[in-house]
Image 1 (cartoon, rainbow, N blue to C red):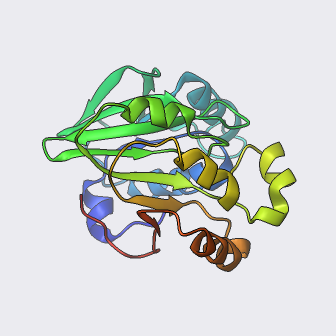
Image 2: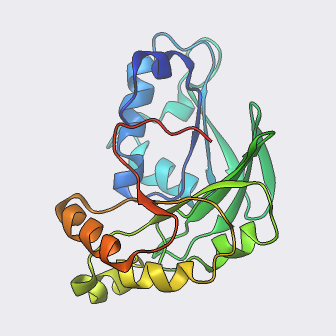
Amino acid sequence: MAATDEMRRSLRDVVLTHAHLDHIAGLPLFIDDLFATLKRPVTVHALNEVIDVLERDIFNWSVFPRFSELDAGYGPPIKYSSIQPNVEFQIADLTFQAFAADHKVPSAGYLISDDNGSVAVSGDSASLAALIAAVAGRDDMRAVLVECAFPNDLGAIAQNSHHMTPSVLADQLASLAADCPVFVINIKPNYREKVVAELSELSIPRLEVMQVGKCYFW
């Protein structure tokens, strides 16, 4: 979990889509790094199934300390908040609503809203059906973030691992009515150049590949 010093000082809520390692690998070290300076726990918001994986396979003493059993003076340094699909929850001035992602394991995408509008994030997913349903009829969409992990020639691997390719993404986006920018995220690093080139060839309206290290404001 890459974080600036300011983020380390202020970030106390983490929202997870699922428990695959590329999405949770930084969490144990993030909490461990903050342990001595925390004044309240880091709250991890996730599906019950994701929380179960964290406690069973990561924070299990064998791999990493079970922070939920430690007392840091204010209680455990980690607190879990179970989320349910289609049920809103609040973090500061942001309202989150999870929707089911089409992935190999229990996974969620999120619709995130404040007074300025809403942003939808697909998470890792083989389709956008649930995202499209979540944003249908909304007139406050500021951006949609979608995955596109593999190039077209690895379509079989993408299908088996429940990811998308540029051609699949283009087909899915044809059903998206939201009139807002669409940003591509979660491209496998080894295939980034090829995926970006294939997306460019498709000339998908309003689509842009999100740039690492760039700040986006909606």
